[in-house]
Image (cartoon, rainbow, N blue to C red; front, side, top):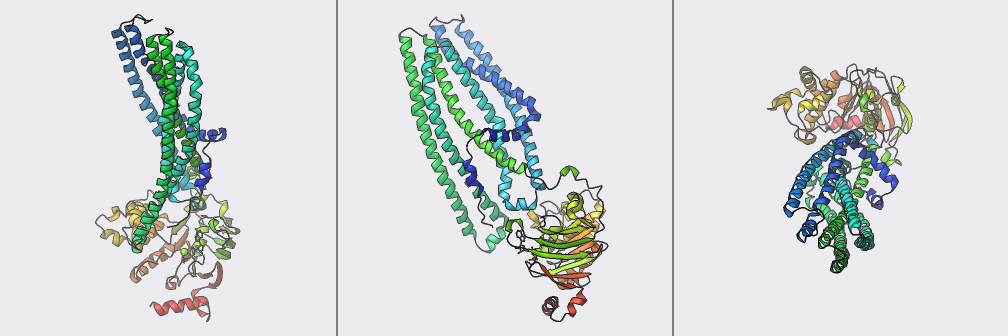
Length: 602
Ligand SMILES: Nc1ncnc2c1ncn2[C@@H]1O[C@H](COP(=O)(O)OP(=O)(O)OP(=O)(O)O)[C@@H](O)[C@H]1O
Ligand SMILES: [Mg+2]
């Protein structure tokens, strides 16, 4: 459970203003809507039409008033007026129905595409980039950030436009029919608008930090759930609850601060806005008394001022939502704009050219990008002719796994080079390159599905016989068969329903199925009992035939017959030779290690 701090949040709260550049950049995400422009345009049209109908319908009360007082200019009866409105309501209902459908099509489909692209980007990003981020942070890009953008595409943008139409239409109506009143109104509204903008900006900032804080609480939940056994074994439940509670308290504190601002905002709106409204109505009432205005028009005026006021009020909150969605698009684009290490379109598995398997490490220096100042490998050089086996031994943290990870191109070298078949590993197409390598990692994490799916991962689409054959060779078939569901046994999340040794044998079966030219075994027999170890060892020996293999082993007994053994210490090779060579060096490191092990284990 790392305690790294999310230090982006402060920088991000700074950016709560909208600039042209930011909007333009965000448009890249909104371009996902483009393929669905027709439903979008039709949706917008029905929205516009619906909004105009709404304005017309809202003229009913005033008109009825005028009809009753015999002042109507249209010469229709009250009943006729109601029938007309009834028809308009029907039309508006139909328009709303289509609009909701159309916007759902646009937003669901376009955002599914965005999610797919984001996921595709995530899985093709380089390991150093992914290591810098926390899992929760990356998943929230796909979930909550996209949801925010989706909210804008499906509802907010439409509502925003509807309110603008209503605002313009409403003001137009008043300006056209009651110019004098309109002037009074336009004199008062700017005060409200400026006040609202001031508040809005501040509240937005608070809500943004609250959002970040909430994300931080999720990180705690995710981390504890991922390591729940450790939490329980150390009886740190109370500690974790405390940690979670502390982050929750921060959320509440920020939320309450934001709430008190929102409360002030509401008070401001009620007092200033409604104050302005009643001021205008008072003026209008005076005009009716003086006979400058029809009573029905006064009613119209009250209704429309209310509508305009409501439109302005809601515009503020939509603006807030749009700004935070722009923030979400930026976080999404930060990921989308990262370079992938692999092009998925090139991922054709059929045409892969098989390597011979000559491997050369030449003066390899390396430090992990996250800890640049700690050199992990300090000039590693060795050669493995095609088809030969070598072993890496040495103390924990010496850099053995790192050597394998560099061959897989998970990280870039700082210095030196690695050649495969005489060519730098970086000159190969990464896809083809990795398809030639089989890895049985130190810690096997399986995928949550069935055993079959996990073995098939080595070569999707492999025949049933090949799967069973691979499982047999990995000495996994016996235990698979002993499960009632056999190959269909669900392994649980990350494989938790299998033992460590069983997981490892599944991983070996997977590598066998892949049939790679180069094999990397990181402690592949470490969690097996003596009997299984012997069997897996035999399986591995068969598997290694004709392949270049690098084996990492703590138990030296398992690597007796490799062609060359390299003893690693602190990022350097300090001894090398065959088992016989190294054992004959009386005061050699390997020898002392071997003696130690054979004394303890038989
Ligand atoms: N992703 C990483 N980021 C930063 N440092 C790392 C990373 N992985 C490993 N290291 C560091 O690099 C050094 C070598 O690690 P490596 O995993 O290669 O050791 P190892 O020889 O395989 O050890 P073990 O026998 O325990 O598996 C260690 O000091 C480790 O802390
Ligand atoms: Mg290791």
